[in-house]
Image (tube, rainbow, N blue to C red; front, side):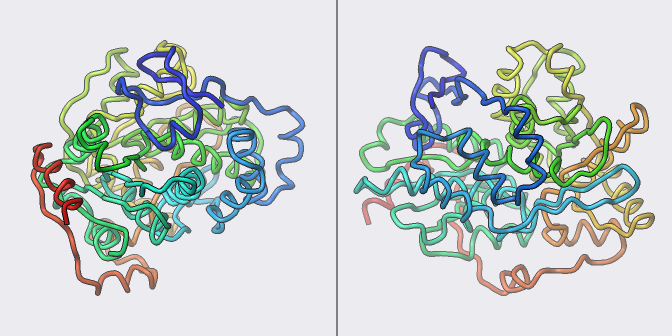
Length: 433
């Protein structure tokens, strides 16, 4: 399996290189030369598979040849040992609950698979691997849980101060061991910029073997395509099946569109965003204009310059009209988000987190105009946004025991500014101890 840089199609590397390096030297993101197209016979029998069996087959289609078959089976089955739940919220509208894993967020899927894959590729080297990851909310918690105690790998998580929920922050800052948290006095975009600059800093290479667990790493995107197949496997309906994806850095949506390219029969996708609606604007105007992120209730989507936009357009040869055929844009304000959370709770008894609420609102709006049925991604357990949920619906959501335990643990984080030199000095000081 070879992958190319989105900046230079002539720069091609094997999977092991792309997983461990994450970003191409020319700052491009890695994309597969070919997306495997599944035969009709696969879809004739995929309803008979369990979720782990489905994931193993899909992983073999993607990575077969790059990873020894028995190792890939073990990595996949270990990563996906928790369920995906397709829950009918109302007639024709389903929630794909992706929060049943260890960190109660959809990013458990990519993080756990990536941890296994990186450990596999790194096991024959002596130099420890350092994972740098920027998070706007759930990525950090999932990566921390996925890589905790993985031998030969340490994780450094950067998160924006005051812009993640209290329980999200505890998931980043209470584990210790091989997990280090850096609280950045800035936005998620600032955190992401620090990570990207570190990867391109040749001076760090003498001290660190770096990789990323953000969705810039192709090892995150590939496994995230699997649960779209699981949604279709569980669905018993007929007709046009629409998927609404709460979107921030756009890795999740890109994975869904990759699944569609593989042959998955999802009729249409919706990019559901908050006030950071640069991609819906692009779909409307044909022009992409990055801008500083704006803080909202749906903080994991507060991204003004999504890294995976380049991958999104790459799937459609940079042609916005081709992309529009498969993708619509939608965005909502905080007030609209709260209103939708309350409306769904009052009418259906279903509690959504603010990200899922935007996904639901986008889907409902689309189906009212176009008809059909569909599902939205419920990307995190609502208890991770307890204050927002309580304000919206008038009561607290049930809190899982694992989150209650975290709330009592002390926070440990290094406070840093947004200047790269300060971050670099912090990294180098760790090596001098």
